[in-house]
Structure formats: structure tokens, C-alpha cells
Length: 355
Ligand SMILES: *[C@@H]1O[C@H](CO)[C@@H](O)[C@H](O)[C@H]1NC(C)=O
Ligand SMILES: *[C@@H]1O[C@H](CO)[C@@H](O)[C@H](O)[C@H]1NC(C)=O
Image: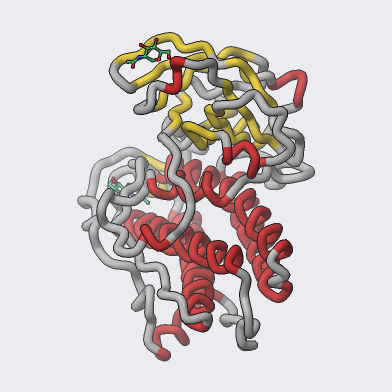
């Protein structure tokens, strides 16, 4: 068993499945389930029953900061993507798509029923964020068409684990921004979602034969990293009002050789349209609640704007377990936090999970 994965190079771990081919994949362009993004009152009632709980029934606060609005937009953008993902995963299992067939009927039944709870809970997160935007007179975020780089259950769960780690880090940033904007009530509500996403993550990790609790202090992130990463799962040109989300989109960073639990040189690739590799660049890693780690980046080859480069992944010196965000930065810092890394980022986030 390997101890890493990235959104690009996902590996399966748990042999729950048999490979016999059966039904064809459902139409990937199908819309969101249960009337999303704007369910009717009766659809909402069903979602709440499936979610084992309700939307908060108090009103959103009377005022919100500008940073708070950006938080809500990013959260809605992310939750709509998660709804699409879990909906498609459930369809794949339900329809016994190749790669999504279970050997054990009880395991299949339980897996489907738990995934349906998660789907409905994600639906309520998306609805709540968009309702709050409407309440503040801001246009809700509209869903995109989505595509996922997975063809079987194990890889899908590894991907869910990866984006959930990114969400768990990004919501920390949302809470900090709510705090800076004095959006007290929203900070509390988002904290309740962080715990909820952590519960999901515990199950995804157990499915991969990993300890359910990943780290003592979960890796932090920045809204801009999540905004960029989610776009890897959208079909370009299909997000109707993405331009109303005032966050940065970085160049894509691919982790070509994801690390094991050891210090080693990693190979990355990214686009460099602005010839930034004419100057020295650095690979900066964000792991746990520690100060970002900066390593020199060595360009190996350059083909047009496509760059291949190497940098050390200093695992041993830094106990770099769990989730790590890698970013090609135009400065060697020192960086005090993830937001400063984002300010200097050219390409990222590269998503790495060790153990
Ligand atoms: C569902 O199955 C299809 C066909 O294998 C695949 O392309 C798609 O990525 C799968 N989606 C999920 C979320 O597993
Ligand atoms: C990139 O920048 C370097 C250093 O500034 C320069 O020598 C090189 O010619 C540039 N390459 C391209 C393709 O513009």
C-alpha cells in the first residue's frame, strides 16, 4: 500500500470492488438533484429528512462584511461542486457502473445510505450559503457542469478525501475572514460545518484503511487555493456567474511524483505563460498549522510555457504527515501564513496527502 495521493495521481487502497463490467455511466451533464440550486418547499422538506436535520431556522445576521460575502460565494461554489460529485458517485453505485460494483451487498447498502446522508447535508450547506447571499441582496452562485478524474469507487473516495481536506483548511480561512469582518454569527455557523466535514473525512479515511483522525491540527489553506482547485472539476465556460467571485485563479500545479513518508525530491509541472521561470522560483509547502516551508525550485525542462521542475519535499525534518498544499511562489518568504503564500503564488495548489 502506498501512502500518498494527489488530485492528479489518485491511488486506490481498499479492494471493496470487483471489476466485472456492467451498466454504462450515467449522463455526466445531468443537472443537480432535488431541485438544486433552488428547491421548492416540498423538495427542501425531503432534503432535510434525508440530511437527518434542518437548515438553521434563525435568520442570517442583518449585516455582513465584504469579506463575508466573498466567503459565502466561495462556500456556495464549493458546496454545489460537492453536491454534483456525491450525486454522481451515488448514481454510479446505484447503476452498478463498472468500477462501482460491490462484492458485499450489505456493504453496498450501507455505503449508499451513508452517501445519501452526506449528499443531502451538502445540499443544505449549498442552499444555506446561497440563501444568505440572497438575504444580503447578492446574486446566488449558480452551478456549473462538472467532470471528475475518477473511474472507480476507491479513487472517488480518495478524491473526496483530498477535496474535503482542502475544504477543511479553507473553512479555517473563511472563519478568520468572518472574524476580521466581525461576522460573528457566521463564524459560529461555519465552525459547525467544519466539524461536519471532519466527520465525513473520518469515514473516507477509514475506507482507505487510514486512521480516521488525520492530524492534531488540520492543515490550513486560503480561499484562493480552493477557488482554483474546484475549477479543475468544472467544464470550462459552464459556470454562469463565476466572474462574480472576486478570487484569484492560479496556474494549475501537477504533482508528478507524489511523495511517500520520507524526504525526497518531487517532480512538478505547471504552465508559465509569463516566463516567470526567467527568475528563481520556490516551492512552498503549507502543512498543519506550521509556518510555510520554502524550498528552491529547479527547472528541469521548459516546452513553450509548460515547465517541469523539481523541489525537495522535506518530510522528515517537518513531520509532514496528512495534507500538504504545494505552491510555486515568486518569493522565498519567509511567509507568516497561507494567505501570504497565496499572494506570491504563481501555480498551485498541488495537493499531497501522506498517511
Ligand atoms: C462515475 O462514473 C463515470 C464512468 O466511469 C466516471 O467517468 C465518473 O467520473 C464517475 N463519477 C464519480 C463521482 O465517481
Ligand atoms: C525568459 O526570461 C529570461 C530572463 O529574463 C530571458 O533570458 C529569456 O529569453 C526569456 N524567455 C522567453 C521565452 O521569453
